[in-house]
Length: 571
Image (cartoon, rainbow, N blue to C red; front, side):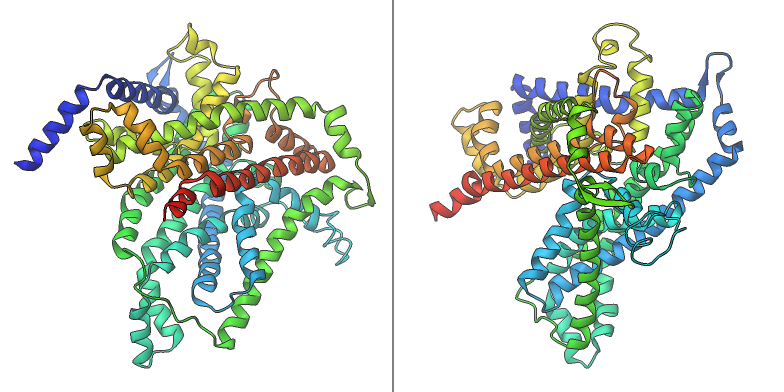
């Protein structure tokens, strides 16, 4: 009864607050219009024909095409392999950091760099590096090993590049999970005579299994949704994302493309639901709280040396692939003439409208970042701190964009806003403008910011905000003067993450960008496809410098103006 009365009181407070009601209505409208509506139009286009009405013809035609069946098979094969390899390498890196005594500054710095590089770089930089290092004119294959006919394109090229791109995500996930395992359970098994391998296989691994499943599914979803890497290094090895893109841009078959997109969306949605609503909860239930005391690190050289050597080699290989990019922009002709030159950087700005590309990308990302950060914090606040019937809907739809491949979302926006229900008015007019690009950037970055905000808000005691309400403050005043300052670090982090994700995005916007806008990632993709690696590397190098500089700036701002500093000073 008390619980029911409390919920009823919360609802009365909510309905008495016009600002909160307006915010909820606007949020529901935004999420419905720019996430659910494009996906609904996509579904309608895949099952409806103006001539025959409801039909499964487009699905039948798609499944009768050998290229489509091959694309599904290829996509699943790559996805499973990348998921397994990324989870395995990520777990090994995390295990070495948490369990093994290799606490050298070099290793710590190496791990930090490797975990950060995929965040601050475009998603297809490693494909460029792979071709330049191991292709037919590769510096390692041709000039070091003397191999002149090495084919880096296809299944193994995509799998290696995606594994190197995604395993740092798994490493970050496993690092947190391993730190939360109480060492007393493992030490008890050791005291009973179990070997290190037996302890790992019978104690540590069972505790990690939900987390391993979670990491596998996250990377599986990322892999099958990836567009840029298969486009550059896939060669004739078709994946679903590239097949859908070519279906709408090459064959001009919108209904066929929509049917294929629905198949891809169905696969990612199933995986997303399992990952979010089953494995995430199971992981949280298995590993609760923090370790009760410090862990006794493994010092046995038979364990430390091979693990350290392996992780160091992988980390150095990843760094080598990223270092290859600026050198690709400084050499006169990659693979033939290694004379240092600045001509590619000069041509970026003099011949290929680089200034406009950086200006357009920077401005659009700069506009979308604060909108994304603020929306993420508002959604997080409503989900964690408020009780109302539409809360579950807002949380689910805001996270849904994580499961929607960029190519699928791009086609949904084309069908939804270049036609669809809105044949006139403002929403019809946004197609082909910067507005739709900003909206796509916001939608794509929203899940990351929302998850970060929810984690930060759950650490704030409810009584702090309740005391402000008791003193007569409205919801807007409480949010801006109490809640937001307490989650300032999370907000700043979300701001920069949204900026970096927006300026390095490719899969969703490549279908929506028009000649009136030049975006850096689209330029890099275009020149990489043509084999103009010098120009592509020059664009990529400047972009990495911008994103890396943004992250460093954020760290400095948080260090000197963040919440943690104020707490420290108060103590």
